[in-house]
Image 1 (tube, rainbow, N blue to C red):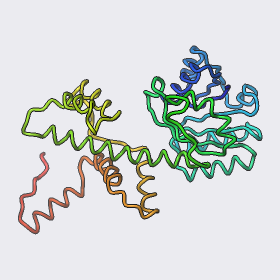
Image 2 (image 1 turned 120 degrees about the vertical axis):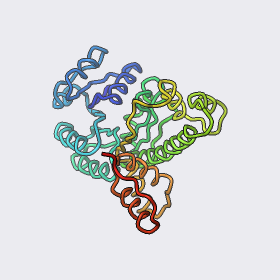
Image 3 (image 1 turned 180 degrees about the horizontal axis):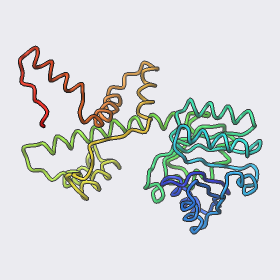
Image 4 (image 1 turned 60 degrees about the vertical axis):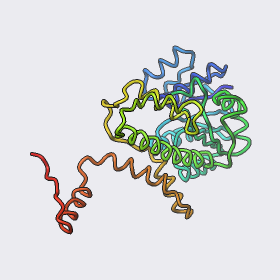
Length: 302
C-alpha cells in the first residue's frame, strides 16, 4: 500500500524503513530537512510541505502521524484536517491521551475523515523485531490499514490487534506503559539491593543468569544485561528518571475506576522522587526527628 508518515524521529523513521522493506510506498514529511533527506536517500518519497500529501496520495489517503503527544499532535491533526478529504484516514501512532484521541476523532469525523489510534510499543528495536500495536478505530478504517499493520508487526498474525473503537488503542497502550513502570521499578529495586549486598556480586553475570530459564526473564531484563555489560556501575548516568505521561494517566484512570494500583502508583512516585536532589520534605523529616526524639540532624556541608 501507499501511505504517508509524518514525524521521522527514531520511531517514525524506523517504522518508515520497515514499511519500505516490506514493499510499501512511503511518502515522508518532517520539520527536519535532514531527516527527510535521509529517508529519501533510502527510497522514500519526500513531501516538503504537508499540503503536498493531497496530491501525492491517492484516495482514500492514509496519513500516519508519529509526533510527540499533546500540542504537536493537535497541531498536525488540525493542519491535516484542512488538507484531506472525506473517506481519508488519519493514524495517530504516538502516545496520545485517549480522551484527546476521541476528541480529535470527533473533529475529523465532522469532515468525513476517519481516525485510527495505534498504541505502538517496540522502541528503537522495532525496525528489526517488529512493533506491538494496539489498534482502535472503525472496522473499515482498520481494514484499510491492515497491510501496513501486518508489515510493522513481528508477524502478520502476531503482535497487533484491533482492540476496540476509536480511543481504545491508546487506552490499552496507556495501561501497557503503566505496567511497564511497575516492572521496571521492581527490577531497579532488586538490582539495587544486590548492589548493596555484603557479597561482591557481578550484576551483569546475574542478569545473564536470569535471562535464561528464570521466571523473571523478559525483554526488559535483556536490556538490563546489555546496559550492565557496558558499565555495571552506571556511573555516567544521572539518577533522574523522566516520565512521558502514560504512568500518570494510568494512575488517574485507576483512581477514577476505583481500582487499587499500588505498584504502578508507587513506581510513578519513585520516578518523581528521583528528580528531587535537595528535598524540603526530607529536610523537614530530619527536623521532626530532631524535635521529638532529639535525634541528630545532619547539617549541610559548606
